[in-house]
Length: 239
Image (cartoon, rainbow, N blue to C red; front, side, top):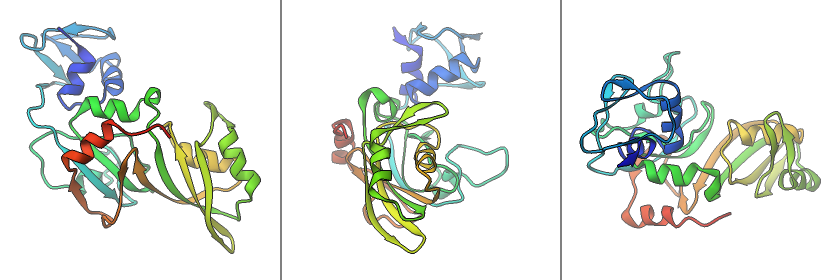
């Protein structure tokens, strides 16, 4: 027997947390019956599982793709507004992939796509405290006390939040470039943190996820992860 959310993650549908959302939203059927109860277990060999009308089967091959996302692409499979998605930047894949976390439409940088739901759960669940590193261009010159506020914590509309580290990389007239490391992944968290200290973001780029670095990968390009990189992600240190 296997938990339904773990089964969906093993199928490459989504991480465990997002699989729970699919279940609670009434999008998952087991043997033709809708399942809403989180924690449901299934027989992964005998039971028939469908997600939004499509059969879910265990992923045979694990795929890990590092993409240097461009601004102007949404981090979803499709978009009701007809905007381009990150999958327009990838070759056609036999395996169904999903993004690990997300980057806003106007954000750029490191995005991992995979069908390994267990790894996705590890990298995105706050319990595991996997650091995400960003370069952030903001308006105005950021003084030391504002950087301290980021690491001491500020109150956002959905509760307290803070950066694990924040440092000024450089500044010029009217703008600053700072590096921010987070262990959470709340919606628009970097932008909201910077707005809270009075320095709105005008450009954002994710540079690292755990041990995985963007490196010299050109904007809009992608590559497959090496086995060593995949192993390293499972061993990513706390921030």
